[in-house]
Length: 249
Ligand code: URA
Image (tube, rainbow, N blue to C red; front, side, top):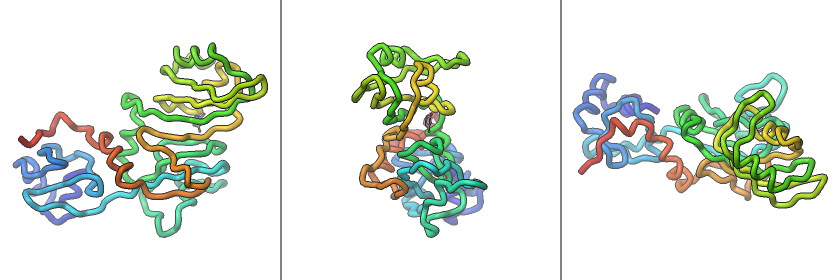
């Protein structure tokens, strides 16, 4: 949520008054004086002070879901169950949406939040958020394939992918089991990368996104709130406006 909106909701005054408070260097987020009223903040994750008053307001929710196959990564769908439908009714609230997209037949880690700005930051290409996938393909993979991924796969339409790391766990002529680490999120990226080396993906699961790893105790379809440690690890993605902050000395 925007800093000015949060302070307004906390009854610190009108939007104009809140702006004046910010400009007069009375607002600190995690020890930094903030001059940018549009900074994305979350009092669940950050210490926000106006003068000596600590803001306690809880603003957003953050879930990790172990997405099962057959469910679409959408908020609403006319034909299929959505990832939002998997949440308990008591956890469903307006503004919840999935960060990034997994295909209907892909399993694994999906973050769901109502913090639109965080989702936006995590998906920005220049942030190069790493994602690890577990993949099974229908053919043998060799060190030559690892080299091709390391160099940068080119799709059949000429689209170039960034360097990716392929780790072969097992491989024979009918089947290979690998980890793939990528830092971008093109549409059907993993499946298209393997098609480019003439292999078909037959199983795909996301294991991590940035600092967040799939909790292996979650069964398919289960979800839980991110814990404090996980929330703290997302903090770098909140500080998009560094230039307009000052460190308190
Ligand atoms: N790449 C794909 O091809 N599909 C997914 O669901 C995620 C990444």
